[in-house]
Image (tube, rainbow, N blue to C red; front, side, top):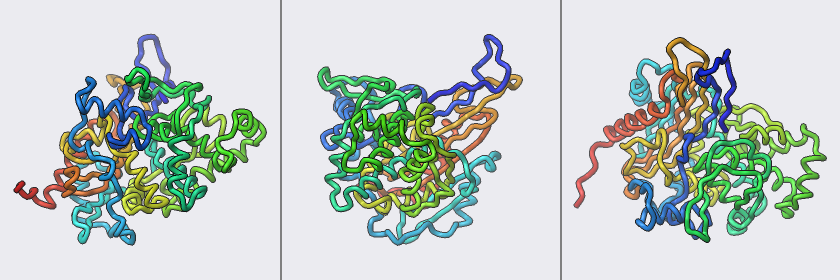
Length: 436
């Protein structure tokens, strides 16, 4: 959702001095997605379009080598290391990471766990306990909440969970108002991809909304999923309710009770999955209409806790192995890579990625407000699992980074830091062995 809130006197011809919440790029670009051979498994239509482009059937930009892993190769990698915790901080590694941040190091929060040698993991951090608004990264909490709700409903039947996600179609409703992000829908009749913002009358499966939330970072899709999650907790086996039953529920239920239902759905699973709610909380829906329907609270995160989420995901400890696997697949970068994931150094790597941003501008002499370059605040957050090269996985590391460097293009900044961190990990493990 893009919101222009003027922070100073505006005259005709002035730039838009605005607070803008950006959870992906403002064009059609996305940041993550499902493996390209997953169309039949998921019914996510945009995967069919991406596959056709990759095979040369349709025109379009092809994916880099690191985005081409098949479905069966995208799985948690630490199932046999479930007792592993984040190691003690390595001072030398931390100093090396801090040196990459330059003169603005006090404006970054960074946590990196190098798992390339599982017998000698190495953890470095810099100001990793700093709290900040998570932006789009908070959508990871929505994924946790949904997979926890499914596990509670069908604890011993993962196929039933999958059927509910894949086969349940819901109407977007008014909570999509308003969101600028476009989503990709596959027109099966005409064999073409349609890009559009979500409208209240649009429909999709729950799994499609999940993909739109994570691949296109659509605030509208995230708000639909939170609303539907509250309904799932309320109606149980009768989910999804008929339109009239849904309307009566939201009309008759007092706002404080709706807020409690929101916290039960969205926040309790964070604690249940071993994470600290004080360090990672998504407190509300992502659209203005959604927040009016169900009042929430504030949101925050730290890079240290986001990294712990990534570790537990790789261990199959986000709900269970089934849930962790599907969340990891949903985070696999198979759309145009942006921000941290767009580093050319990662072209050969499988990248599992989410990002978010929030910037604010105010009038300042000789300063022009531009995307990702706020002068009041300029938050950019990136979380990534990197396997390099994809398939061989010689290098394997987790990154969580948050920054607030004013007047600097934070998207380019994160891309540059991704390259530098990758080169640092490469130097630690030496050159790859020559091919036989």
